Amino acid sequence: MEFPEIDEVYKLLTEKLESWVEGAITLLPNIVVAFVIAIVFGLIAKMVGNVAGKLMRRTFESRQIAGLLTSIIKALVLVAGIFIALDFVGLKGTVTSLLAGAGIVGLAIGFAFQDMTENFIAGVAMGIRKPFDIGDVIEAEGVFGNVKEINLRNTLVETFYGQLEVIPNKILFRNILTNYSYLGYRRIEVPVGISYADDIEKAAQVITDAMNDKDYVIKKDETAVYAESFGDSSINLLLWFWIRYPGEPGFMVVRHDAISTVKTVLEDNDILIPFPIRTLDFNAKGGDKLNAMLKQRDEESSSDTNSSSQKNGDEKAADNTSHADDE
Image 1 (cartoon, rainbow, N blue to C red):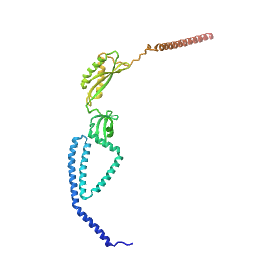
Image 2 (cartoon, helix red, strand yellow):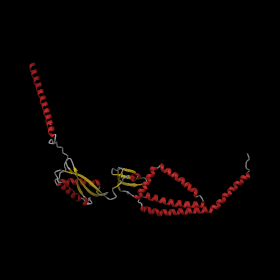
Image 3 (cartoon, rainbow, N blue to C red):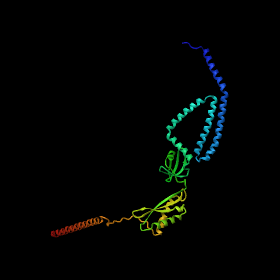
Image 4 (cartoon, one colour):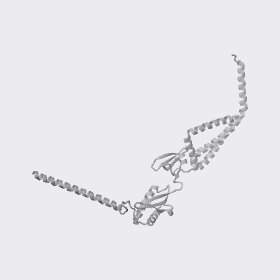
Protein backbone atom coordinates (compact mmCIF):
# COMPACT_ATOMS: atom_id res chain seq x y z
CA MET A 1 0.00 0.00 0.00
CA GLU A 2 1.42 3.33 -1.09
CA PHE A 3 1.06 6.44 1.07
CA PRO A 4 0.98 9.93 -0.43
CA GLU A 5 4.07 11.92 0.19
CA ILE A 6 4.07 14.58 2.89
CA ASP A 7 4.70 17.33 0.39
CA GLU A 8 1.60 16.42 -1.60
CA VAL A 9 -0.58 16.34 1.56
CA TYR A 10 0.78 19.69 2.65
CA LYS A 11 0.12 21.10 -0.80
CA LEU A 12 -3.50 19.92 -0.79
CA LEU A 13 -4.14 21.36 2.68
CA THR A 14 -2.54 24.65 1.73
CA GLU A 15 -4.63 24.94 -1.41
CA LYS A 16 -7.81 24.22 0.55
CA LEU A 17 -6.99 26.79 3.22
CA GLU A 18 -6.10 29.36 0.60
CA SER A 19 -9.43 28.78 -1.15
CA TRP A 20 -11.28 29.21 2.14
CA VAL A 21 -9.39 32.40 2.96
CA GLU A 22 -10.03 33.79 -0.50
CA GLY A 23 -13.73 32.95 -0.17
CA ALA A 24 -13.86 34.58 3.26
CA ILE A 25 -12.11 37.70 1.93
CA THR A 26 -14.56 37.77 -0.97
CA LEU A 27 -17.56 37.41 1.38
CA LEU A 28 -16.15 39.75 4.02
CA PRO A 29 -17.98 42.84 2.72
CA ASN A 30 -21.20 40.84 2.48
CA ILE A 31 -20.70 39.52 6.04
CA VAL A 32 -20.16 43.05 7.33
CA VAL A 33 -23.26 44.26 5.50
CA ALA A 34 -25.22 41.28 6.88
CA PHE A 35 -24.20 42.15 10.44
CA VAL A 36 -25.12 45.79 9.87
CA ILE A 37 -28.52 44.78 8.44
CA ALA A 38 -29.16 42.45 11.40
CA ILE A 39 -28.27 45.21 13.89
CA VAL A 40 -30.43 47.77 12.06
CA PHE A 41 -33.42 45.41 11.95
CA GLY A 42 -32.88 44.63 15.63
CA LEU A 43 -33.16 48.33 16.43
CA ILE A 44 -36.19 48.66 14.13
CA ALA A 45 -37.82 45.67 15.84
CA LYS A 46 -37.28 47.31 19.22
CA MET A 47 -38.80 50.62 18.10
CA VAL A 48 -41.71 48.90 16.36
CA GLY A 49 -42.26 46.79 19.48
CA ASN A 50 -42.47 49.88 21.69
CA VAL A 51 -44.99 51.56 19.38
CA ALA A 52 -46.97 48.35 18.92
CA GLY A 53 -46.93 47.72 22.68
CA LYS A 54 -48.51 51.09 23.44
CA LEU A 55 -51.10 50.56 20.72
CA MET A 56 -51.90 47.02 21.90
CA ARG A 57 -52.29 48.08 25.52
CA ARG A 58 -54.80 50.69 24.43
CA THR A 59 -56.66 48.20 22.27
CA PHE A 60 -56.63 45.17 24.58
CA GLU A 61 -57.27 45.29 28.30
CA SER A 62 -55.47 41.98 28.81
CA ARG A 63 -51.75 42.57 29.33
CA GLN A 64 -51.02 38.99 28.30
CA ILE A 65 -52.66 39.47 24.90
CA ALA A 66 -50.97 42.84 24.37
CA GLY A 67 -47.56 41.40 25.30
CA LEU A 68 -48.05 38.34 23.08
CA LEU A 69 -49.03 40.34 19.99
CA THR A 70 -46.18 42.80 20.59
CA SER A 71 -43.68 39.95 20.80
CA ILE A 72 -45.03 38.42 17.58
CA ILE A 73 -44.65 41.73 15.72
CA LYS A 74 -41.09 42.18 17.00
CA ALA A 75 -40.21 38.62 16.02
CA LEU A 76 -41.59 39.07 12.50
CA VAL A 77 -39.52 42.23 11.95
CA LEU A 78 -36.38 40.56 13.33
CA VAL A 79 -36.86 37.41 11.23
CA ALA A 80 -37.31 39.51 8.10
CA GLY A 81 -34.01 41.27 8.83
CA ILE A 82 -32.22 37.97 9.41
CA PHE A 83 -33.47 36.60 6.08
CA ILE A 84 -32.27 39.70 4.26
CA ALA A 85 -28.89 39.54 6.01
CA LEU A 86 -28.42 35.85 5.23
CA ASP A 87 -29.27 36.50 1.59
CA PHE A 88 -26.12 38.62 1.35
CA VAL A 89 -24.01 35.75 2.70
CA GLY A 90 -25.65 33.16 0.45
CA LEU A 91 -27.11 31.02 3.24
CA LYS A 92 -30.76 31.76 2.64
CA GLY A 93 -31.47 28.27 1.32
CA THR A 94 -29.86 26.62 4.32
CA VAL A 95 -31.82 28.72 6.79
CA THR A 96 -35.02 28.01 4.88
CA SER A 97 -34.39 24.29 5.28
CA LEU A 98 -33.75 24.76 9.00
CA LEU A 99 -36.97 26.73 9.37
CA ALA A 100 -38.88 24.02 7.53
CA GLY A 101 -37.46 21.43 9.93
CA ALA A 102 -38.33 23.65 12.89
CA GLY A 103 -41.89 23.93 11.55
CA ILE A 104 -42.22 20.14 11.47
CA VAL A 105 -40.88 19.89 15.02
CA GLY A 106 -43.29 22.62 16.12
CA LEU A 107 -46.19 20.74 14.51
CA ALA A 108 -45.25 17.57 16.36
CA ILE A 109 -45.02 19.47 19.65
CA GLY A 110 -48.40 21.05 18.93
CA PHE A 111 -50.00 17.62 18.56
CA ALA A 112 -48.28 16.39 21.72
CA PHE A 113 -49.58 19.37 23.73
CA GLN A 114 -52.87 19.73 21.89
CA ASP A 115 -54.90 20.54 25.00
CA MET A 116 -52.49 23.27 26.11
CA THR A 117 -52.35 24.70 22.58
CA GLU A 118 -56.14 24.75 22.31
CA ASN A 119 -56.47 26.61 25.61
CA PHE A 120 -53.80 29.08 24.50
CA ILE A 121 -55.51 29.79 21.17
CA ALA A 122 -58.89 30.12 22.91
CA GLY A 123 -57.33 32.59 25.36
CA VAL A 124 -56.01 34.71 22.49
CA ALA A 125 -59.39 34.62 20.72
CA MET A 126 -61.24 35.61 23.90
CA GLY A 127 -58.75 38.39 24.48
CA ILE A 128 -59.68 39.80 21.09
CA ARG A 129 -63.45 39.22 21.36
CA LYS A 130 -63.61 40.11 25.09
CA PRO A 131 -66.82 38.23 26.05
CA PHE A 132 -66.20 39.28 29.68
CA ASP A 133 -63.84 41.39 31.77
CA ILE A 134 -62.30 41.08 35.21
CA GLY A 135 -64.99 41.66 37.83
CA ASP A 136 -67.89 40.46 35.65
CA VAL A 137 -70.37 37.91 36.97
CA ILE A 138 -70.45 34.92 34.61
CA GLU A 139 -71.94 31.43 34.54
CA ALA A 140 -70.57 28.56 32.46
CA GLU A 141 -70.49 24.79 32.86
CA GLY A 142 -71.99 24.95 36.35
CA VAL A 143 -69.56 27.63 37.62
CA PHE A 144 -71.21 30.89 38.76
CA GLY A 145 -69.22 33.77 40.21
CA ASN A 146 -66.95 36.80 39.70
CA VAL A 147 -64.05 36.79 37.24
CA LYS A 148 -60.83 37.39 39.19
CA GLU A 149 -58.11 36.83 36.59
CA ILE A 150 -57.85 36.10 32.86
CA ASN A 151 -54.76 34.25 31.57
CA LEU A 152 -53.86 32.95 28.14
CA ARG A 153 -54.57 29.36 29.24
CA ASN A 154 -57.32 29.64 31.88
CA THR A 155 -59.68 31.97 33.71
CA LEU A 156 -60.04 32.22 37.50
CA VAL A 157 -63.58 32.63 38.84
CA GLU A 158 -64.48 33.13 42.50
CA THR A 159 -67.86 31.51 43.19
CA PHE A 160 -70.43 32.91 45.61
CA TYR A 161 -69.59 30.01 47.94
CA GLY A 162 -66.07 31.41 48.37
CA GLN A 163 -64.33 28.86 46.13
CA LEU A 164 -61.77 29.73 43.42
CA GLU A 165 -62.49 27.82 40.20
CA VAL A 166 -59.86 27.50 37.44
CA ILE A 167 -61.67 27.12 34.10
CA PRO A 168 -59.71 26.20 30.93
CA ASN A 169 -60.27 28.82 28.26
CA LYS A 170 -61.39 26.25 25.68
CA ILE A 171 -64.44 25.46 27.87
CA LEU A 172 -65.46 29.13 27.99
CA PHE A 173 -64.79 29.48 24.26
CA ARG A 174 -66.70 26.36 23.15
CA ASN A 175 -69.74 26.32 25.43
CA ILE A 176 -72.58 28.66 26.32
CA LEU A 177 -71.41 31.51 28.53
CA THR A 178 -73.78 33.81 30.44
CA ASN A 179 -72.41 37.25 31.32
CA TYR A 180 -74.72 38.84 33.91
CA SER A 181 -72.68 42.06 33.98
CA TYR A 182 -72.83 42.84 30.27
CA LEU A 183 -76.23 44.57 30.24
CA GLY A 184 -76.11 45.72 33.86
CA TYR A 185 -79.58 44.57 34.90
CA ARG A 186 -81.40 41.34 35.75
CA ARG A 187 -84.97 40.15 36.25
CA ILE A 188 -86.09 38.46 39.46
CA GLU A 189 -89.03 36.04 39.65
CA VAL A 190 -90.93 35.49 42.90
CA PRO A 191 -93.72 32.86 42.96
CA VAL A 192 -96.68 33.35 45.35
CA GLY A 193 -100.03 31.63 45.84
CA ILE A 194 -103.37 33.18 46.80
CA SER A 195 -106.66 31.63 47.85
CA TYR A 196 -109.24 30.60 45.26
CA ALA A 197 -111.69 32.92 47.03
CA ASP A 198 -109.54 36.05 46.46
CA ASP A 199 -109.48 38.35 43.44
CA ILE A 200 -106.48 37.74 41.16
CA GLU A 201 -106.50 41.22 39.64
CA LYS A 202 -106.60 42.90 43.05
CA ALA A 203 -103.72 40.77 44.29
CA ALA A 204 -101.67 41.55 41.19
CA GLN A 205 -102.33 45.27 41.50
CA VAL A 206 -101.41 45.61 45.19
CA ILE A 207 -98.23 43.54 44.72
CA THR A 208 -97.17 45.60 41.68
CA ASP A 209 -97.77 48.91 43.47
CA ALA A 210 -95.86 47.77 46.53
CA MET A 211 -92.85 46.63 44.49
CA ASN A 212 -92.72 49.79 42.40
CA ASP A 213 -92.32 51.78 45.61
CA LYS A 214 -88.93 50.09 46.13
CA ASP A 215 -85.85 52.08 45.12
CA TYR A 216 -83.99 49.03 43.84
CA VAL A 217 -86.69 48.26 41.24
CA ILE A 218 -85.90 49.63 37.76
CA LYS A 219 -88.04 49.56 34.60
CA LYS A 220 -91.07 50.03 36.81
CA ASP A 221 -93.42 49.97 33.82
CA GLU A 222 -92.38 46.33 33.27
CA THR A 223 -93.07 45.19 36.84
CA ALA A 224 -95.91 42.70 36.55
CA VAL A 225 -97.73 39.83 38.24
CA TYR A 226 -99.05 36.95 36.14
CA ALA A 227 -101.35 34.05 36.99
CA GLU A 228 -99.20 31.00 36.37
CA SER A 229 -101.29 27.91 37.19
CA PHE A 230 -103.97 26.28 39.34
CA GLY A 231 -102.42 24.72 42.44
CA ASP A 232 -103.81 22.13 44.83
CA SER A 233 -104.90 24.78 47.30
CA SER A 234 -104.06 28.10 45.63
CA ILE A 235 -103.90 30.14 42.45
CA ASN A 236 -100.18 30.36 41.67
CA LEU A 237 -98.96 33.83 40.70
CA LEU A 238 -95.54 34.93 39.44
CA LEU A 239 -94.02 38.34 40.23
CA TRP A 240 -91.51 39.80 37.74
CA PHE A 241 -89.38 42.88 38.33
CA TRP A 242 -85.97 44.24 37.23
CA ILE A 243 -82.96 45.31 39.31
CA ARG A 244 -79.47 46.61 38.56
CA TYR A 245 -77.05 43.71 38.53
CA PRO A 246 -74.42 43.57 39.79
CA GLY A 247 -75.20 46.33 42.25
CA GLU A 248 -76.38 47.24 45.69
CA PRO A 249 -78.42 45.92 47.36
CA GLY A 250 -77.38 42.45 46.30
CA PHE A 251 -79.50 39.80 44.63
CA MET A 252 -80.22 37.77 47.79
CA VAL A 253 -81.10 40.89 49.81
CA VAL A 254 -83.49 42.09 47.10
CA ARG A 255 -85.22 38.73 46.80
CA HIS A 256 -85.60 38.48 50.58
CA ASP A 257 -87.13 41.95 50.76
CA ALA A 258 -89.44 41.21 47.82
CA ILE A 259 -90.84 38.06 49.49
CA SER A 260 -91.35 39.93 52.77
CA THR A 261 -93.07 42.80 50.94
CA VAL A 262 -95.43 40.47 49.07
CA LYS A 263 -96.44 38.69 52.30
CA THR A 264 -97.04 41.99 54.12
CA VAL A 265 -99.06 43.65 51.37
CA LEU A 266 -101.29 40.59 50.93
CA GLU A 267 -101.98 40.43 54.67
CA ASP A 268 -102.76 44.16 54.75
CA ASN A 269 -105.30 43.71 51.97
CA ASP A 270 -106.89 40.62 53.57
CA ILE A 271 -105.69 38.32 50.78
CA LEU A 272 -104.95 34.82 52.01
CA ILE A 273 -101.76 32.91 51.22
CA PRO A 274 -103.14 29.39 51.78
CA PHE A 275 -101.32 26.28 52.90
CA PRO A 276 -102.18 22.77 51.61
CA ILE A 277 -105.37 21.25 53.09
CA ARG A 278 -106.54 17.67 52.46
CA THR A 279 -110.32 17.15 52.31
CA LEU A 280 -111.96 13.71 51.82
CA ASP A 281 -115.11 13.97 49.71
CA PHE A 282 -117.27 10.84 49.33
CA ASN A 283 -119.91 12.43 47.13
CA ALA A 284 -118.00 11.52 44.00
CA LYS A 285 -118.85 8.43 41.95
CA GLY A 286 -118.09 5.35 44.01
CA GLY A 287 -117.87 7.40 47.19
CA ASP A 288 -121.08 5.98 48.75
CA LYS A 289 -119.80 2.43 48.45
CA LEU A 290 -116.49 3.46 50.00
CA ASN A 291 -118.35 5.20 52.84
CA ALA A 292 -120.44 2.09 53.51
CA MET A 293 -117.36 -0.10 53.56
CA LEU A 294 -115.68 2.21 56.08
CA LYS A 295 -118.77 2.21 58.32
CA GLN A 296 -119.04 -1.58 58.13
CA ARG A 297 -115.38 -1.90 59.12
CA ASP A 298 -115.91 0.45 62.07
CA GLU A 299 -118.99 -1.53 63.19
CA GLU A 300 -117.13 -4.85 62.98
CA SER A 301 -114.27 -3.40 64.94
CA SER A 302 -116.68 -2.09 67.59
CA SER A 303 -118.50 -5.46 67.77
CA ASP A 304 -115.23 -7.34 68.20
CA THR A 305 -114.25 -4.99 70.97
CA ASN A 306 -117.57 -5.51 72.81
CA SER A 307 -117.37 -9.31 72.45
CA SER A 308 -113.88 -9.32 73.83
CA SER A 309 -114.95 -7.17 76.79
CA GLN A 310 -117.95 -9.44 77.55
CA LYS A 311 -115.78 -12.55 77.37
CA ASN A 312 -113.28 -11.06 79.76
CA GLY A 313 -116.15 -10.17 82.12
CA ASP A 314 -117.54 -13.75 82.06
CA GLU A 315 -114.09 -15.17 82.79
CA LYS A 316 -113.69 -12.88 85.76
CA ALA A 317 -117.15 -13.86 87.11
CA ALA A 318 -116.30 -17.57 86.75
CA ASP A 319 -113.07 -17.05 88.65
CA ASN A 320 -114.88 -15.29 91.45
CA THR A 321 -117.41 -18.15 91.75
CA SER A 322 -114.62 -20.72 91.84
CA HIS A 323 -112.89 -18.84 94.65
CA ALA A 324 -116.15 -18.71 96.65
CA ASP A 325 -116.70 -22.50 96.35
CA ASP A 326 -113.18 -23.19 97.58
CA GLU A 327 -113.72 -21.10 100.65
